[in-house]
Length: 81
Image (cartoon, rainbow, N blue to C red; front, side, top):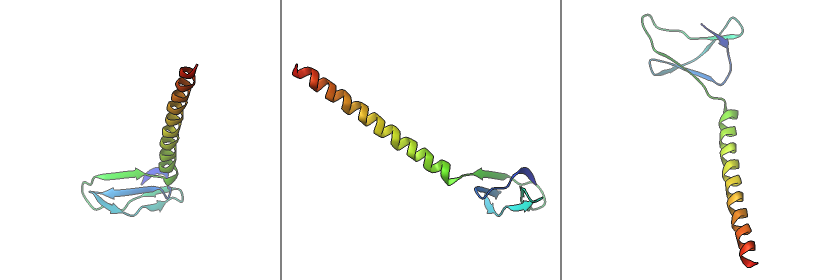
């Protein structure tokens, strides 16, 4: 049992094999493990965070483009004077 809140965005693998997560004690998450040593990997990947990252990247690209275009426009206006 891993004492951390269970959430639908968690995934786990044991020895590089995906396994299902079991809800324990109403709130926490756990895994059924084979006897002996195992390597456990937990991954938290909420779709909201993934899309926010992409949205921030697009916003930065648009902002950079707007800055470059406004700089060109400023130079073009000053060259006409």
